[in-house]
Image 1 (cartoon, helix red, strand yellow):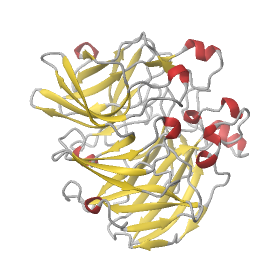
Image 2: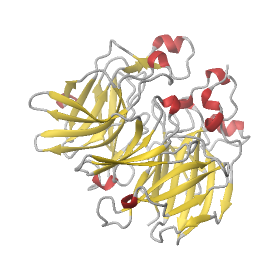
Image 3: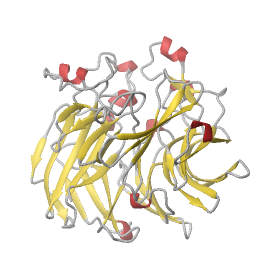
Image 4: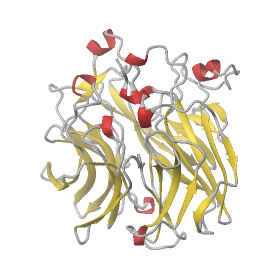
Length: 444
């Protein structure tokens, strides 16, 4: 039986490529000095295509180095886990992996403390990468990370600290950690939960860390069947959101029940007086019977939490199918005006984006930027035009497939001219399969 995630746009690329002086249409802004990196599943050596699950495919990082108005290089590299290194006939780079609990991270790639990390969730360790995307090995942040890590972090723009919430099916808790600006874990709080929930993201305000405990949980039945990803929707698991004071411990968490739903991604959150405003992309349900296909479309919500009353009001702001929300990350935990998402099909199985949306939360207006059919548009990352630039004064970077060339482009848009011509298009030499998260890692 064919597997959707091994065919068409999802089909893995089979070679690692290095290209220099990549051709560009338009003009790359001179102030863009750094690397645009994007990661996603690119399985190597699949033994059973029918049982392959997109979420656990070996991670491959794609990178474009920009400097002085040029695209200096493009590279794609598999993350060398034990298995990937063996498949490639190479020695494993060694490092503090958790015994045999090892996988090539495929979900996010970030820069922190002058280093580059590939991330995945579910109890696995990050891998550190060199500037040229070669693998340095698994990482435990100088021995300060006790278990696995998260695929999502939130950086406090005031302190430079990374906040994360990790999960593992064998734990009876979620683990909140703070990674300081030197790359060491300085705070750890274990928050008790039941059923082993999957927790992909978190939210951060000036007062709170917001923890999701939603009804996608570990499934012993799927595990017994040998499922690659043994998590599924659980009607018996109550949906709730936890408010953990930034300096509090597990006993200080205030849990607030909500209607059953699933959240992959937070756009942003902030305090509004005594209330909390939380903008998210919400799935009405997810992973029914463990399947990626057939989910109801994800929509853009605003949740307003009143801690004194113990209530959470849910409002759908845009019912168009969309995912991968982004804001100007300098405003993480602070009020934002603009947010950006990718328009998508009605399930993760159809998360091959066909355009971008830009929402103005002050006016309620949403701009739509369509792309040609088959473009497989990825997450749009906001990059300010200068360190002190105003919100929305900058660029959006995204990958899109050019069906005429049969290869992908790095498209650089003006955020303030969202529907206008691209500022620049970097024409990559290969196709980049749909993946998960990307980030801009400035070199200065």
